[in-house]
View 1: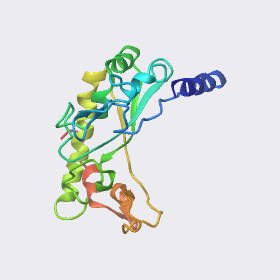
View 2: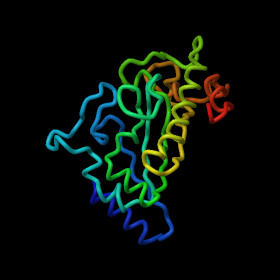
View 3: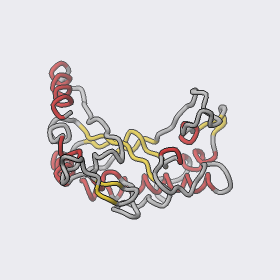
View 4: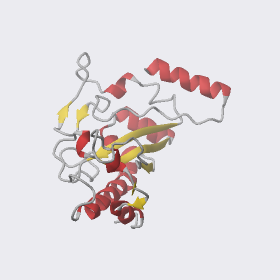
Amino acid sequence: MDTYFSAIYNLARGYHPTVKVLTPPMAQLRYAEGFNMIDCTDQYLSDAPNQKGYDFMPQVYGPKNDGVNWHVYWNWGRELYGYCLWSHHVSAYFPQWMKTSIRDNQKAVTITEADLASPLQNFGFNPLPDKSSGNNAATAAISIQLFMYQEATVGPVDYGVSPKIVSWLLSDDTGCQNGNPPCDHPWHAAFDNNTERSWFNLWYTASEYP
């Protein structure tokens, strides 16, 4: 993968020198971070017991990018920036060489998917079964607000650059709106049958500084 994505970077920049090539986002909890944030255990590759998945892509996540990109989901109660047990911030678990590269080269950093994890994402115990019943809409909105605030204010202290964070919002037309077949698309949707969902309105219209 390091060779493949490095070649894509070289090709793109060769044809279009001004184009900006971001790193491919690694799937959360799939060995890239070298740590399972759900049960707080090491999660190394079987043939590399002391290396994170990112360690196998030093070119792509080092010089062969114009910005580092990742996705992040979290359980309610894991919004603070840090380490287990209270944090699901992916960037906190980047290897130090990767954080240093971002800081020293002032690489742009972008989270292109960010949202409170749905129950179907299997992030372990999730106290919110939905984003609508009871006080869940307000709880979800505050969680999203707090997580993004922590990434935007504490993250730069860790890796040296202010991030751009993109909320993961879906417009669902897959036929699974009512959970048949089961899917988590409705969880991430900001609208339900053209009606703005309460959690989205509460979050979107709130201050970015809780």
